[in-house]
Length: 423
Image 1: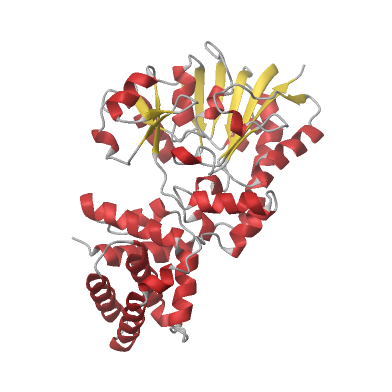
Image 2 (image 1 turned 60 degrees about the horizontal axis):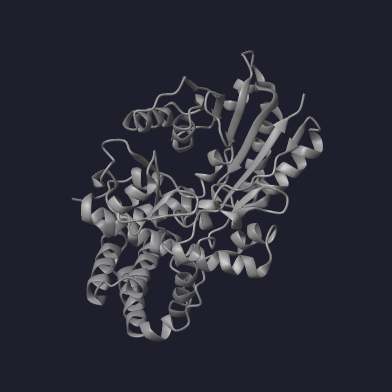
């Protein structure tokens, strides 16, 4: 069985050096299962949420920088400090484990350095924690947020985003009954929120396909369409299929398209468990599909556009450390192309629903404002009455933020705009 802390170091190093998401980084190493996996997840994710403060603490206790060849030990220190300060592991277990790993992977001198630093931090733990002001965001991530939000809003986002998120699910029907069975609560939008992240496949109703995991914010997109039974819908960038399932459950004749055949396999598996089926599933690049479109136009196009995924920072704290303003601009350019082409596949008076799981307004509000300025054959349809008043903007968009539903555990940042193609 792999050493859990050694695996955590490898994962953290892959995330921060290769700019990988946690899942990708974890899949690239030999990770433990069951209880050790839960500890591994908590260790890495806690470290990512607290990394800015951890780095500041390390700088205070280690004036000399380790040489580049001993980078491994730096990651060991990040994780070791995280355990000492924010997890309930006994100090001796933390220190011994990371010192031994440093000795195995570097040399005895580096291991001695790791030992000295961790022992000092363990001795000063209470004093260090008293200085913790809840820092999470890097200077680059502040730059991303400051382009769209005021200081007070950014501060609220940072505070809320540090909390470990609850688990939201969407049910086919009878949310009150399923909330009682699962020990959760029904949110205003109809999602069920569970108190803890239990093993999902072991929960009642999973095997019977009665529900699927979907953050409450993401579930608002299909709800914004209203009654869609019998309408032909193109779900662009559809995998892994949460919104696809909502469309089918609402009676839409749904075509699901995604560029990744592997992700479409996941989509098919998810829909099969739910006893749902698309009208058609297409593996294609959305840009190429739209450029060469020569079929009967759709009533509705749901464009869940590729984005920076910065809105998922509660569940994926690595985004704070791996995403940059350049990433935002790159994704915004792709979104603009998709938006400008989508009209080719849409009927006159048809609906284009645009959404992203980005917290950046460049990929949301600004993107749509620019699109409407350049495309006079589209108009904005204000979105209202989908069970979440706080997310309705004056312009008619939906914009959720991590501090929305704060007393119930918060939610992802998400943006939705509903557009109509005029004849």
